[in-house]
Length: 285
Ligand SMILES: [Zn+2]
Image (cartoon, rainbow, N blue to C red; front, side, top):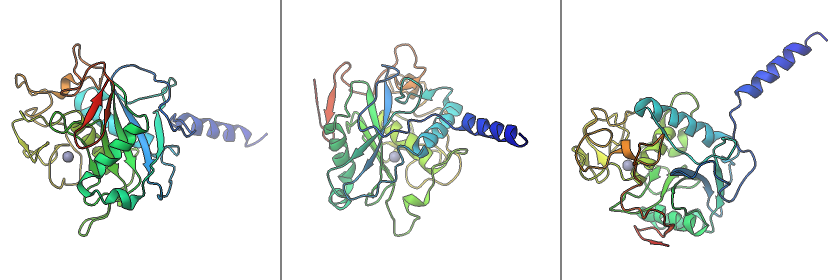
């Protein structure tokens, strides 16, 4: 008998701290826990890519939980992710039909091609955007997204394997569980672009969809220094900015909880399901 109780206790504790996530692979969106606006997560592998099973080993689930904790600390709300009825993050697996080299040939438009494939595979919904962890390389970035209304799109892509001449490769960064770092901030950064931020009316907007006033801003352009990011410090560009008629993250329908009268991204066709085909194009019905 001796030693048995401590073992059971240790086992119980280990089970208690293991976060819930769906361990079975799913190739389609599972039944939703909510019909509100939400971010659906996909782990995608090119046809010749190595399947690291990031959808089922808990890596992405833990990283996004960390990212969302940061978001809540900054904003007082969460980003609403697609979860199953028992509260686990719903991550889909998508094996792409094209090779990494074929996709890489599209250079600045790799994201557009992946968006096309994601939507063609059935991932399109009147109230969802998609965050894709792509286990392949881009030519020059670890993340890319649309930016409505200028560049319509419903799919943000994180490129896990991009390499650079003068900077550490994307895969040198780990998914974090305690302190948000590279991938956690990258996920929020690309989600915010897909929701239309920063808007053209933002005071310190630069480089299309970024700001240039504070290097710690999660939407700062150019290379961002290491360290903790902030959500619109000074509240002068895209969150609680008080600029009349200017898109504000505070009123995004993707926040949990959302404000009364919260809005989907600019130029979304409410109630219609759109199929995005990259390059800012879509058809809605
Ligand atoms: Zn950006």
